[in-house]
Length: 221
Image (cartoon, rainbow, N blue to C red; front, side, top):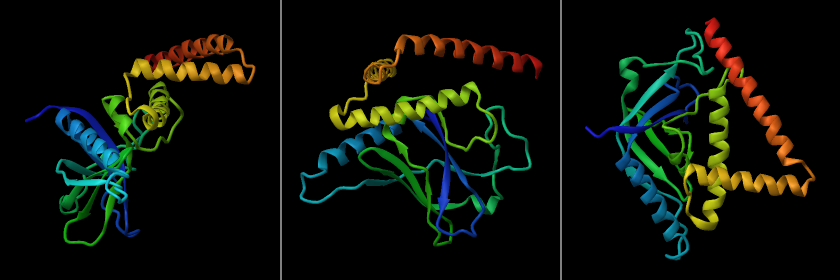
C-alpha cells in the first residue's frame, strides 16, 4: 500500500441543514495523488482560453475519504481544535466521491449513500501541497498556541504563493517563498517609512517569549 505523505483534515459543508451525521473529512494523500492534483491543475490552466470555452475544473473519482463528526463531549485538543470521532456505522457510507481541481485549488465532493444530499469539503489552494505534512482546517476554540501561529503563516504563505503563480506558475521551495515574502515586506516597510530591522528585533523578542511561555505550560501540564 502506498505511503501517505500528507494528511488533510477538512470541514464538510452539506446541502441539507438538517443533516448532521458528519461535518469533517480526513484524506491521506500519497505522492502519486499529490502529483495527480498538480497535473490536473496544469491541464486546467493550460486549457483555459485555448479551446474557445472556459475550463473551470477537472473532476475524477477518488476514494480514500474518511468522514468524521465533531466530538463536543470531549475536551479540546492541545492545539485548541475540537476532537473528532467516527459517526455511527450507517452514517459513514458515501457515494460518488470525486476530486475536483480548478486552476488554483482543489476539493472533494460526495453524497451520503442513498440520499440526494450534496457534500463538499473546504477548498484548499494548490500551494498548500508545499506546506506542512498535516493541514488541519478545523476551527480553533482556545487561545493561540505556537502550532496555531505556524498554521496561520502556512495559510498566509499559501495565499502569497498563489498570487505568484499567476505570474510565474513556479511555486519554488518554502525557503525561496519565505525569502520572497520577506523581501516584499521590506519594500512595504520602506514605502510606509517603517524601520524593518527594528520590527525584526521586536519579532525576535516576541518569538523568544512565546517559545518560553509554551515551554513553561508544557512543564506545568
